[in-house]
Amino acid sequence: MGAAVGGDKGGPKGDINITPLVDVVLVLLIIFMVVTPELQRGKEVELPNASTAKRKEDAGDPVVVSIDKTGAWYVEQEQIDKDKITDNIKQALKDMPGRAILIKGDATLRYGDVRALIGAIRNAGAPTVSLAAKVPEGDGK
Image (cartoon, rainbow, N blue to C red):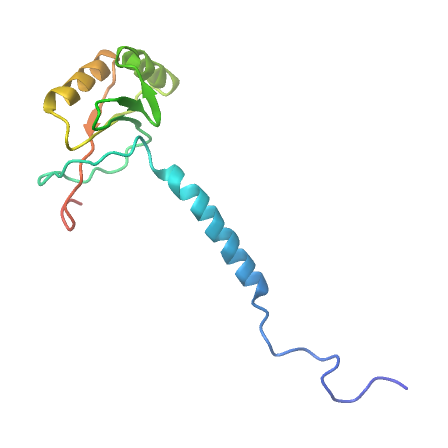
């Protein structure tokens, strides 16, 4: 009658159950796989190299305007007609006044192509316009 003395039947186990840990790690992996592509801002372009560029401290959430190698203009990921870019930037600045504009231009573009975009952004009343470039490894802080 009574409880069994000794044996393995009801006592604590010495093994570690890693199943919950594996579940959590797999869920985190899936979350990162889904979120990482969304972190890329603007249209994917090949940025030019800049030997004298300095890394800029993050001053907030800029509006990313891109020009691809074909000369098409994008605000974030959306392609915009060149005659409507000023209105688009005005709307973005109206929603969040004081936002900076970051231009990502393809390395194969001519200066005149980027200059036309800078002029359109300035006409929209943007307070700050910055150009994105690749900073050589080990340079810039």
